Length: 135
Image (cartoon, rainbow, N blue to C red):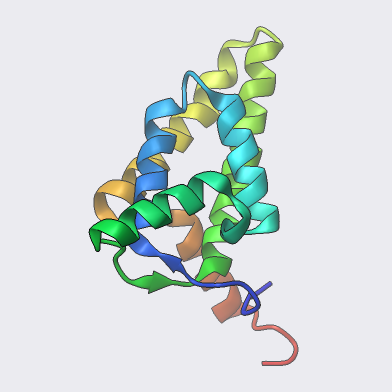
């Protein structure tokens, strides 16, 4: 669902969050589950780490441009699901936990290094192909 009821997010703040996701993916998956749940289902404007990074970037003056938060929320839902699956597989003793973790690292690296959000691209393509009923 397209989200126009939540505030836009700053691009460099989101890129920093992607860098943090890349760095902590294999070791602290529980944090990524929590961050993905808060930012994906509640909104970036309620996530303590996002508020901290946004304030720090605003002080320095390098927040970047504003981006659609709906697409970023969708990306964080994917973060939540992938990190939950990876954490569950790890807890079950399966070696397959590496597969979703590698996908997380790959896509988070693409976000922070190239500002390419694969989940945001899919989100946009979906709504171009299947527009909402009221549009």
